[in-house]
Image (cartoon, rainbow, N blue to C red; front, side, top):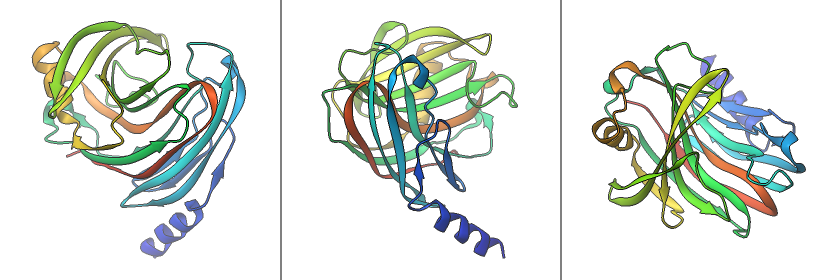
Length: 238
């Protein structure tokens, strides 16, 4: 009965079109999320389309056009994965792989992993005490939160390391962003290597921070029309 229910959920999710601000489709442990959280800072439109969604991964694409509110994020169309929350120091690996493409690169946008950690395991998953972003691509005249503080080699690749803080839900959120020097359209690696770097080199408190959220998608700022396509994405927390 359970397997039948999951199969029905997957069948419902596949082919689903999402155009409202917070539309979402789910086939545990994966979801695809529209997430137009900054849409009121500009004008435009965006829809996400589920191509395949199952317990083994997610495939989807999003079409968007945004103008106004230069330098502000209009959306983070993404796929997320659920997992048993644990202290970052207790995480042994975070294996992930993704294949993606973007048809129009003359835009202001990034393609990135987004992870949140918090001292409170029950913290809302929409923000955290710390945020880890891994930018596989940066298009146009945008930059991560804060300023560049280092250059690091993680997982055999070179990254700009940025750091800054913002106020989220009335509390400070510290953001570390790793930015690739050129687009990485096919990526396979262990995200835990980034936490290891931060723990060893930037004083990240891994023993007191729980990993509470893990997503991959695109932050759209301005430009378009553009289509961002994820052919396959998988991730897990061990």
